[in-house]
Length: 260
Image (cartoon, rainbow, N blue to C red; front, side, top):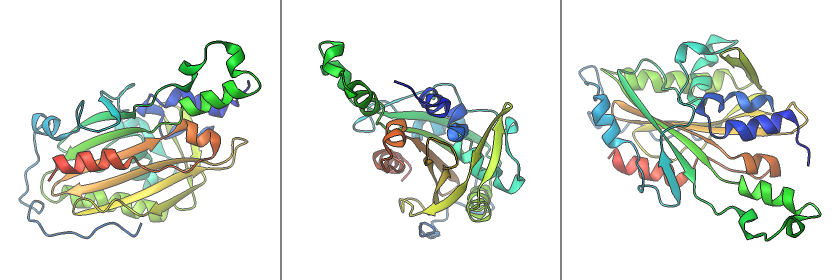
């Protein structure tokens, strides 16, 4: 069984928020501001301790394992695009909170699926291409990085706007790098958002210029008062089998419930 270096990199990157955006080498605009009074110039950011109480935790997302972000969230200063106006998109895709938050924290939610190769009693059971099919199926699971960030004043509104503007400005694609590792997106498209929170933007960044075909990565940023929730989802198995996938709805639902 052979895979291109791009797909192999994707498989490795599935457990690392550091590489979520750079694997690409391989909406209706959201809901409107509800005017809930939680934002505004006088808003005070939550503490890290408060955010850690609000972010999803083990046992709170049905069908998912929740824990620390494997590989960690990269340093903001080391993630940049070739066009500065696209930085908010690239950073959201790597789990970095947009703008200048006062505090932030992150978790990873991995879809809990039984490995189909566990059903085999011998390699013969997975002969004639079945092993590759089983491998693809075993990797057909959503991995979502969630980052909560809190802002002083109207920082959350400004940060979300920077992402919304970048999605529109960078629709034709852009290149980026993290710690010298380079990747390229050929297009960025706004998607219908979950409709949670006060306002939100969802988008897909895609690379379809390589021999592996279309390689999409999905993200959504949602504002809840002066707190932003950034979600980035990757599904390696879906990529390899060319199946559509989106930001994990159960993860958004669970996180939104804790932010009400």
